[in-house]
Length: 275
Image 1 (tube, rainbow, N blue to C red):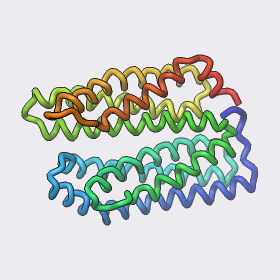
Image 2 (cartoon, one colour):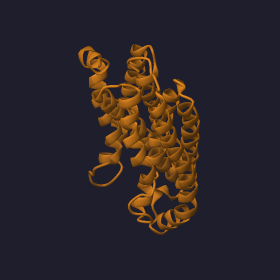
Image 3 (tube, rainbow, N blue to C red):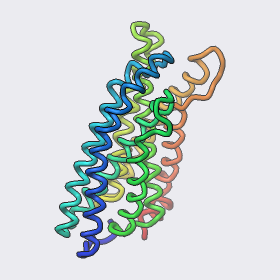
Image 4 (tube, rainbow, N blue to C red):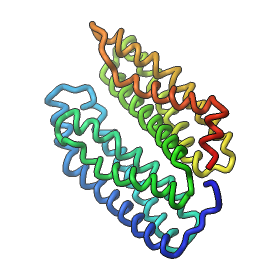
């Protein structure tokens, strides 16, 4: 926050209602989508012999659990807003970041398997994305450029975790051939750790008092994502198959690199953190 957050009575009632809708809706839909779509997604992936059929039974419910956590935090946020507590903004920022994270990836296997097109989890993702900008601007008094940069760091958070999921999938499908699995055994945990660094930076960008600490945490995520992401993408594009082909593994390190340019530049960093 750029100044002490003051929640007026009318703001508290409005944002309390919004928080209840996002919280209750997110929890309900997280349950509903699992019951409606999980079996269809897994059946379609099995029929198409897609590699992620082995890991999707774990990861899709795991993201639903994270989504339920995000919804619960939104409900806690609603209490803070109704009572005009300054901590409501902080909990709301954490809630929206977690919910955006949880509601993005499950759409990929849903659409990839053609079991649910468009991905139903976008019904959670897009309302939270809209609220993200309003929450930061109206309550947190953050600048638009900082909100957009936070979104870029958040995408690095998501994309590096997706790389970790994909590496897990390929690793599981290649074991016990440890020669072929070794690249994915190395990059699965490191991609996820880079993701956690970006997630911490995304939240800290708006809530931490020591902004430089968030800069260093973000740079650690950038360097780690580059160190593991580009070799993983190169291996997938040029060594894994018989012919060179595009790989989605490249997206994580590319977005991380773009974020790194901003973090490395003191001028750009100071500009983002200045209203």
